[in-house]
Image (cartoon, rainbow, N blue to C red; front, side, top):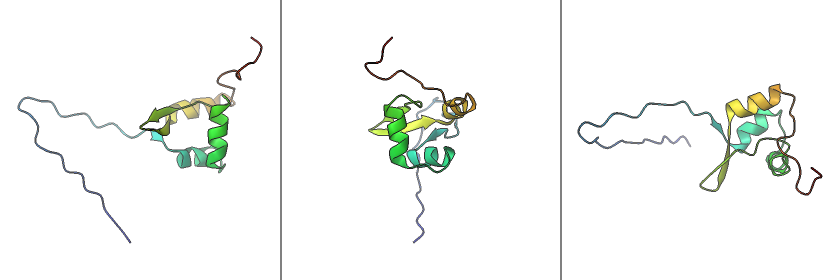
Length: 89
């Protein structure tokens, strides 16, 4: 079954500027799994919750990650992002 989603935009108010188009650079958990080499979604959430990878953003209860932030983290050798709770300072 092939479905297409069509989004219609209403008329703009007089004198309003059109919004600039920005490429989607936010990744869902499946995209992050693919970027990390095929790990599971649960592994991604565990890495985030333990502070071993960037936490990402929460948008309406869904977690999303910035592609540039993940690529920079991978290029740096995957250092821990934060120390674990209760760790000695």
